[in-house]
Image (cartoon, rainbow, N blue to C red; front, side, top):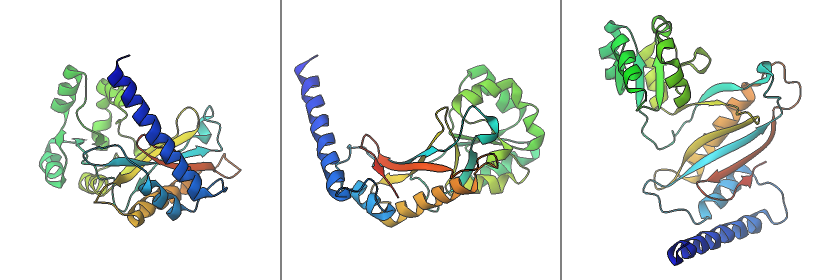
Amino acid sequence: MSNTTINKTKKVSKKYSANIAKIKAATAGKDKLDLKLAVETLFSLEQPKFKDGAMVELHVKLNINPAKTDQNVRSSVILPFGIGKKVAIAAFVTPDKVEAALAAGATLAGGEELIEEIKTNGSVNFQRAIAMPDMMKKLPAIARILGTAGVMPNPKTGTVGDNIEDIIKEILAGKIDFKNDKGGNLHIPCGKINTTFTVDTIVSNIQAALDAIEKSKPEAVKKKLVASAFISSTMSPSIKIA
């Protein structure tokens, strides 16, 4: 390891330790904080020098058995202030809806020709995909590609429908899909620490996400859905919220 790498590691460790000290001072012996105070504390931490700011994330441990399909959580939420990131959308639509999808804000729109292009390239260059019901029967040809990228349209997340313009507008307005991982956890981006967002707007986004999680509780789960919840920013320690 070079001296430069060692120095960088020491600098990161020092910054991380300083951030932990700030969190401990804010909690003052408590194991969790009120949401607004937690976000204020997060904003006070030293953040990495990213051009658009560090991403704020909500991490939730669920009281579910992820091995049981009837306990899995999968839904979506429209964050009132978005996440501060431009989203590229691919719309799989019938020929008569291509122009309407593009006018609504889709980055790509098409039918069989778009499917063939993705099949040939073997990759995606968009963050969200939506589809009309008539196109869903043609997507199996690229289902593995879309699934690997985590963008397969799904009726459960509202990314399949005939009202394609409304779906696009919702996504551009801040709609986020979420589903639990194999450990029964959720990870949801809720905005960035930059001049675009304030403590209050981040709080609103996180609260909207928490509300959506509660509403997505499976009938098979009889106990409280959320076991614990934490917030963090990119590369920061986490803060447990009440």
